[in-house]
Structures are given as structure tokens and as C-alpha cells.
Length: 228
Image 1 (cartoon, rainbow, N blue to C red):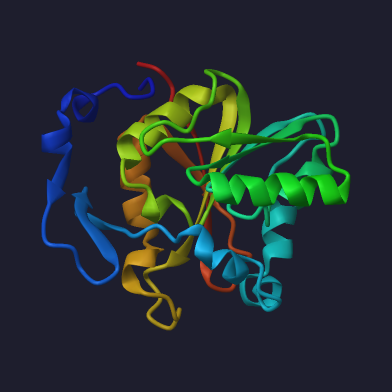
Image 2: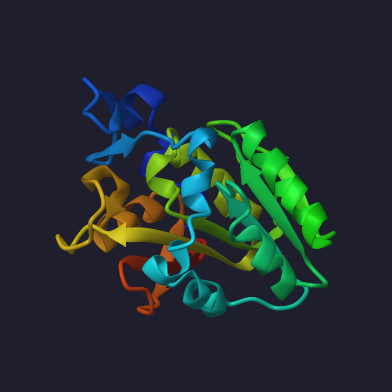
């Protein structure tokens, strides 16, 4: 199935999303049975850089597990402060990292941190709620770390991401495990593998594997489904 083809692509915005009264942590928009969570603003930048994050989430294992080559182009979508953009840039010295974010304030932080680190292969990309701003067939790996569940227009964004992938490109979704009640994260900020697979299928992405190396999160890989 080609990206964006099939019954889901023919639906209107009103049919695709259902609006309801927002819950405490949600925006009131429901997609495929899931209420979309609120976006964390740039005011929460310090939380992204908290000293305990590495051990809580084992972000070192996450970065090590990414299937990267030195010349790859990586889109770090919802890049925030560049927490992942900077170490990934070191893993792709002959490639590029596209630090994608809705918030100009976050992108300013990424640019400043990249300059301080002497990294010249990080490019800021200002996204919109429906468009990540990526050229077709330009990305080897698109990374979403604790971001996808907050995207207000997931169908439109993921369809654009699928089109931006190279033929053998990979989407990596990292989400807190909703199947595990012991994971101390608000429900709307967690996701089951079943839900993630369903939503990726809607834009022509098929599940490739889940790498079970993280203490609290799924690390799920998806690729383009074969065209009919």
C-alpha cells in the first residue's frame, strides 16, 4: 500500500477526527479511539534536560539501538532542546540531522547548543501542526521520542513523514508503554503497541520490529509497506 492510500486517505478531516470535551491532559480531539495529549511547551525545556533522564529512560541505549549509517539523514521530529539531535549528529558525521519542531523557541535552543558543541550537521526545521516540512524521499530515519501522542494532526503529519522517507527508510516511535500500569506516566502520554501499529498502517507504514531495551518505553520501528 502506498503512503496515504486506502480508505483512511479518502476520509475528510471531520470524519477522521472526533471532537469532545477535553480531558485534563488532552486536547479533546480523538483519533482512531485515542484522545490526543497536550503538547509540552518550551517552558518545559528544563525537564527534557533533567540530569536523571539518562538513567530513567536509558537514552544511551535508545541512541545506540538506532539503525544508523554515517551518511544518513535523520529527522528528529519534536526535537525540543536537541537532547537527541546532538548525539545523533555525532553518529552521522557525513550525514545531517533535521531538528524539526513547532516552536521557534525550541529550535533556537537547538541551534545554540549545536554551535556550542561545534556541530555543523544539524539543521533546524520549523514545522506546522499538519506538515513536518520534509522534502519527499529525503530522510533515512524519522525519530519520534515521546512526541507522537501529542501531534494534533497525526494522520497528516505521518502521511508527510511516510512520503519523506527513502524507500528503505525507517520511522522510529518511542512511547511509554500503556500496557504496563507500573509505568508512572499519565495515560494520554502512553501508547500501546497495538494502537501505534493501527495508526501507522493508516498511512502505509508497516511494523518491522520492536527493540526491547528500554525500561519504560516501546522502541518501535516501521517502514513503508509494499505498494499494491
